[in-house]
Length: 119
Image 1 (cartoon, rainbow, N blue to C red):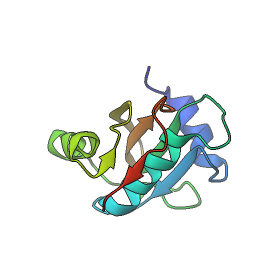
Image 2 (image 1 turned 180 degrees about the vertical axis):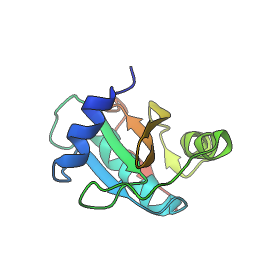
Image 3 (image 1 turned 135 degrees about the vertical axis):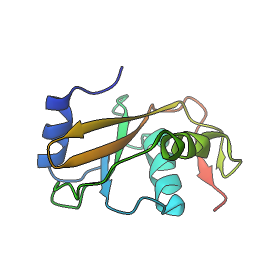
């Protein structure tokens, strides 16, 4: 189930950790793939999803970004691109705020670890 706006705001105001990564870069697929693998591997065994938030800086500030359906499909396509094996369970969505949008890649812990990238 997608995060609520309040949950997203909470993740934006907190520090990055083993379950949350933020970036302003909308096309760094290497960084995205590495984070997706890390979240899927769930090294700390939290059994909780990880969130890669695109459109926010390290301090949680939004940069006014807007995300198209095409961009969201491209992020979702990372799952089946053959660069992340085994393919993780993940969901991609966006949320709008007054100061911009964020795209979120939500990754569930994988039962088939280790997950690795070929990027």
